[in-house]
Length: 214
Image (tube, rainbow, N blue to C red; front, side, top):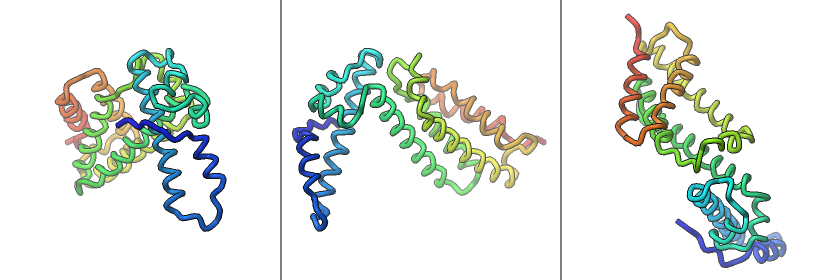
């Protein structure tokens, strides 16, 4: 969905500065909604342009024009195109992590929980839409927030594997942290595939490797 933003941020800022105690909450919520709409329009515009022309060819003028706002307004939100790409990527990572936490609650069996989380994570990797991703990884990961999300994902997997080990559903001869790292590394292979069924096949292979040893 695209937003054509007709009200400038300068006007919004001017109006917001006049808000005094007792101002109706509906007004403040409308201002926040407008800001969120502008921000999302900018993020979507930048990502689309990066995918189409390459991230290093972006200019703030191009982004502002595609988002339907003025360049001066754009600079009130972001200082440069790199910060825009990082913000988009950071939002998507947070969204995926939230979804993985949700699907983690969809099954009572630890092994089934593990399967569901791995399948969904594999789908995230397969559908990865980084624009010209080669050479962009360092740029997107420089702020450290993505690494924090990765640690949270690993911790979630470790907790599931520990439950599975306690239930006798996963091998106990290796540390859960090592098994979690193995799962994430093995699933990296699906990022090179365009076939959805590849995710299920690779996850099945990973789960077979985690079976309790006789």
